[in-house]
Image (cartoon, rainbow, N blue to C red; front, top):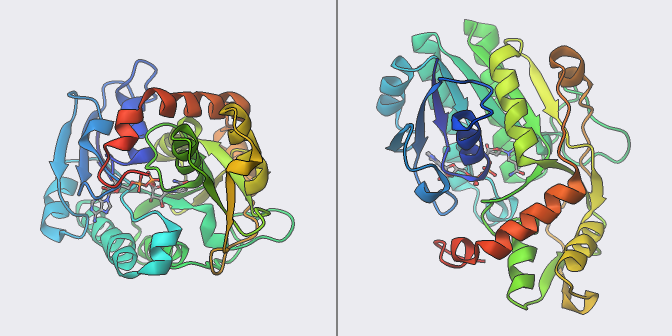
Amino acid sequence: MRILVTGGAGFIGSHYVRTLLGPDSPAPGVELTVLDALTYAGRRANLPASGFTFVRGDVCDARLLDELAAGHDHLVHFAAESHVDRSIEDAAAFIRTNVLGTQTVLDAALRHGRRVVLVSTDEVYGSVAAGACAEDAPPRPSSPYSASKASAELLALAQHRTHGLDVTITRGTNTYGPHQYPEKIIPLFTARLLRGERVPLYGDGRQVRDWLHVDDHVRAVDLVRREGRSGAVYNVAGGVELSNRELTGRLLALLGAGWDRVAYVRDRPGHDLRYAVDDSRIRTELGFRPVIDFTDGLKETVEWYARHRDWWETGPEGA
Ligand code: NAD
């Protein structure tokens, strides 16, 4: 089995590669190629030194994707611009990579009869006041980031219906763990607290997110790659709903800091109040359930950042 992993030098993609090449691999003996442009969010050093092929390149490069698709059985598509705040500042890179890049991946897969897993997000549902969204809920994205991911999904499903493209989609919830670039809340707050600085909490911190450990996320993605129904979408939830204020409290406690280290900043425009997905489909069809306990996972994540200051202090832009 030959798998092309786009965006494999980023947070979740690199964890996927390490998992597939590791001792408990769900796909032993797999041959892997990573395609990554190494933007600010991707680092070669996130990946093992050997055991796979690394190609530095752009997912929008149709000729490159065509060559790579020819030599691989499955394409697992993580590559994206992934930070909501950046998309609010400037949406152009998000539309290019997340929409055009996905179209390029889908077209190459179709030409060569390959299977694609599109790694998408629960943010496509928009804010969910009560209950939880099942996969057939309509997309109601609020940010250019989530709109670009919803667009990518619609293209994938259209290619499935029109041309029979073998594609599955995962919608994971907010993901945490080591190697996440320190712009998202957990690594950003951890890095700032470790440096003795204050942390910026948006608005009143009431926004609720469901937290999924990166290890559970990548195991779900690979299960969907192996056993997911073609044309189906699968929600992947961690099952731990926390407000940003509650999460901040946990990080402060883990790092021995008080609420005086919190600076309340103006809320993000269009900030979704709550995300929540119903993950019954992946549980009943594929037997998936997340196994990493949030308290343990968060503690280990904070400890990883404390032990790897060089990783986040010497990165391209730092925290
Ligand atoms: P990330 O920003 O850490 O990594 C993205 C990777 O894609 C980087 O290595 C970057 O160099 C690469 N990349 C960007 N543009 C590229 C291009 N044009 N060509 C090739 N490579 C390019 O993101 P992440 O958090 O690891 O997210 C991975 C995927 O999972 C994304 O599709 C994201 O939408 C999705 N997702 C993320 C979360 C989360 O909480 N982080 C939750 C659900 C879904």
